[in-house]
Length: 357
Image 1 (tube, rainbow, N blue to C red):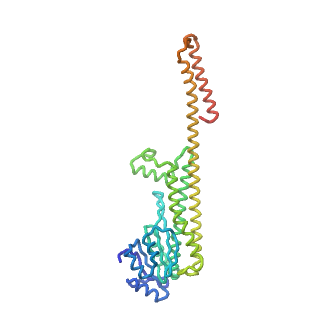
Image 2: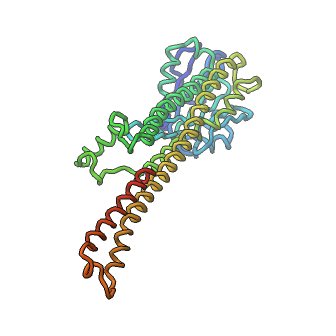
Image 3: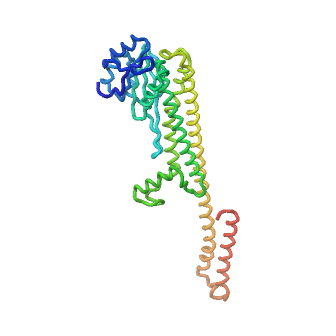
């Protein structure tokens, strides 16, 4: 097989040993010793590339199909010869404020672990390196690998949730800032300035104006939804691993999985809080827009009312009467001007007192 197998090793009493190149021989050696297991890491294998692993380890066809096709929800399934778990590691890109979710499948069976990852945000390399530095943990066998992988994925959830919380606070300050005052020291402002410099424009140039606030809130809400799709469905599998009676999982590992489950609950609560706050911010922003529009309409109406008075007087004054006031009365012209000016001033004071202007 080609380099689709990222890493393959036999771990005996928690210490790495290089086994036979043949998977069947390596698995047989791990099982024969009684205190060892085989850990194979694969990256986006094809059907043909995974066929040998499927045959040697006796993996269930449905689990293999899920592992190859990806696009699965986090879940835990128990088959006769193996345990199959799907995780969705997430990554946060601060330059674009985006959350990306990849997929990680873990097969656990008698003296073997097979991990299959799709995407680039998998924590497997760091997990393997950390476990190899802690042989006393790795000595617990495949259960230790399943725990360590789950723990690393969930810990990353908490980190991403914290990053999203910072972005949410900045967006909240931006929405509720007086007169749409820009938050110059926020990460969003710095990113916008970098984008403007890259485009060769100056700050404030309309050509680099970002999308409306409502659209940005909606895009942010989509990122939270993507995050929620990774964290929410994982709650049931972690709760199941925290209990007894799960094949291929050591009973003494239950407290550790309960700890991961607690961290996952915390992450889910943070995600739900982010989603609720975003909905509240969007509703408040739309309410602000409605208030601003009402203020604008009142100002327009006030100015129109003030303009209507001289327009009406001038319209009547300009009609063809037999006795025009200006022609027969000496003070009629300035009197009409004073009348129009006084009326407009009175309306201005009235609208100003009522807060329309």
